[in-house]
Amino acid sequence: MDQLDHASVVHCANCGTVMEGEFCHHCGQSVHSVLKPVHHMLEDGLDMFLHVDGRILHTLPPLVTRPGFLTLEYFAGRRQRYVAPFRLMFVLCLLSFFAFHLVADRLLDHAGNPAVAGKRGHQDTPNPFAADATAADVRRHLDRELASLHTAQASTGGIPGVDQGLEVAERRLRGSADKRLVELKGGSAAGAASSSSTGTTPVPNRSQSSADPDEAEWDRVEPVHIAWLPEFANARLTEFTRHLKLNLKTAFHSRDASERQEARERMVAGFFSVLPQSMLVMIPLFALLLKVFYLFRRRLYMEHVIVALHSHAFLFVALLLVLMVGMLSTWLHPVAPWMAYPLGVVRFALIVWMFAYLLVMQKRIYRQGWGMTLVKYWFVGWCYFWLLSTVLGVALVLGAGH
Image 1: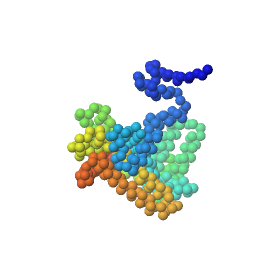
Image 2 (image 1 turned 180 degrees about the vertical axis):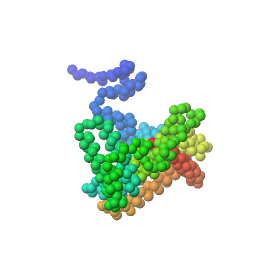
Image 3 (image 1 turned 90 degrees about the vertical axis):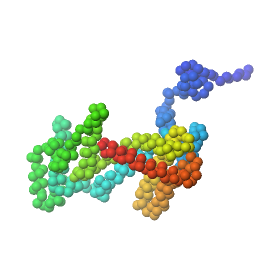
Image 4 (image 1 turned 120 degrees about the vertical axis):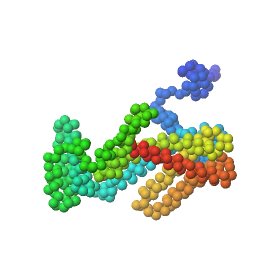
């Protein structure tokens, strides 16, 4: 006898309602269980935070090649197949700033260690005192290094093997200092170097280690006191001012190359750490700018926000492509120097396309004549330039006080 197999009815595990799809229409709980293999959890995590799924394939090509298309699709209600504007802008912002941070770190490494970069692959260890220009610089540098070693020796508490290693490091430091002093002053400086590194010099403390007469002035910071701010805010501003002055002093006035390099890296890292927040400030400001210039177009402020999000998302993609082309040109230069010209043309075309894209996008979305569009495009760009310069200047100051 033939039997009919009826499809089983699925009930919501939370409220017991009969399910009619992947989500309960009564309480909203998903029919899918959270108890999954690890690779499924990773896929869901990427989809939740980055939306890295099939929608990215429908989003990136028109974002780069079709000005205004995604914005008009969003206004028309066709949004499901594309990545959400804010998520798209934020992810591309993080990726581009991450890439620029890597390039900035590489440039700092080359700028701060030219001798090491020029002797890459050389078997000799570079002299840590090679950047010191005078005998006084060498002695101050040596005193700082010895103070660090003595502090480490005191904190280890006589662990077997550690004291011997620290003694070996101290002898190497003294030998390197002697060698640098001989290079600076000739053979007559050997005795002075020995006298400065005999071990009889007391370990300098923080207030005695520097002979710079201006250091006390740099370290002195007047407490910030703004009457309408709470006490903790004034204390934070005072601490920020102190960090800012010390970082600037170390980065541009220190005679120790390693200290200058470390301070500059710290400032660059602080700058890039506040850049994403700075872009979050630029989005509503740019939308407000569009609202002012297109006040009589009767568009909601949120529509201008969507335009601003898609515009910045495109800019981040374009800047990332320009950076990648530049890195490719640098990488290919030793083996294929002839590629520099075509890659330069590609990079120039990308930069031109950035300006043309924004103009065409503005024309298609707001639907005004070319004359009025060009005038507003110029004024919007001019105002945006000064807004961006101000925001980046504030980010630079905040990063310098990191």
